[in-house]
Length: 468
Image (cartoon, rainbow, N blue to C red; front, side, top):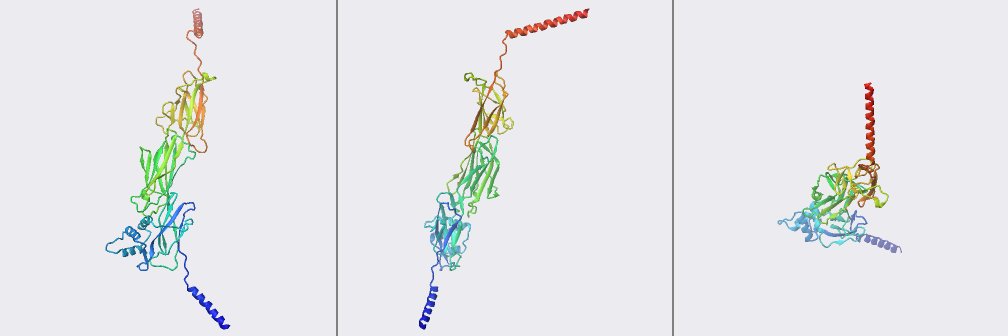
């Protein structure tokens, strides 16, 4: 019995020792891509480009000739005097995150044979052993462009520890979106007003193998004129010295930002902010502004238009009538237009009794006049109350000393169209003068003669008195 217990104890010990000697399969290493939001509709995939090879000097080798040739091209390592294997080993021994490396990655990203991530939702996948992998992120909604990335798994140049280390990548993206805003929140403006526009766009990620990489912003404007010396361009928080080219014929400018694109896409995803001022000069009651991005490797994309609007007031001048049948539309009535502070506004006469608020002092008038239809229109106005003070009455009528008023308002919080108002004023007809030869004339004649008789009598009485 004692012998049995000893043998049993020995067997247990032996089994435990053997168990410790049996190799346990290690979990496959993983690649995880970080900084992609849950609502970004993306597909992730990978391709192994470098594998372990203990027969080589570095312990590594490219997976096939196509991959090897891409690296040879981009590292300028092709040498007819040296065999390809030696060239490849030199590249593998010196791989770094350089411009050549980025160009190679961009070309590798165009190869076929990529495998989808095993867990696309968690942006994570298992891969087969040590090596160098290329990872692609494709945006299914075409909202972003992502850099092709390199994921090393124990890729440490002939230093291969037994435990495989996972790879975690921080994605770089550029948003294919341009936004535009203006500092006038309600969208209501007046001629001569200065407003500030802001353009926001991100530096794109452009395939580093592309020649003459293009990244331009174009801006177009109607109803206003650029203040050309006010354009400021920032990369992040830092102002950069890039000036726009203006085209006066099309009232637009182009800003070439291609210098922000380098072979490593080091600025990809960074914010570019462009601000500038314009002077409102509209004659059609609307200011329209749009911006567009042109870039290599993607269709152009634009901002929504940013529209501003102005107001107009129509005044109608009539006689002071009681019945509609007695109504007369009066031409030739002249007015000063006053703002809420009592300032007399200045206008440019556009003809047909239509006047646009002057943006400066050139060719201006202060008196606006009604036409044959008894109306005048003043345009280019902002919201608020305006007064019409009559300074010239139509022929046969007296000036109305009471001002007419009109208030311009918008519907809702933001103007979406020209906003208008109407007002009117009535004048009293001047009384008719007495007719020639009538009773009025007789009265004046008799009165004048009486005065003359009295004056003559007083003269003779005074003369006799002195003669005595």
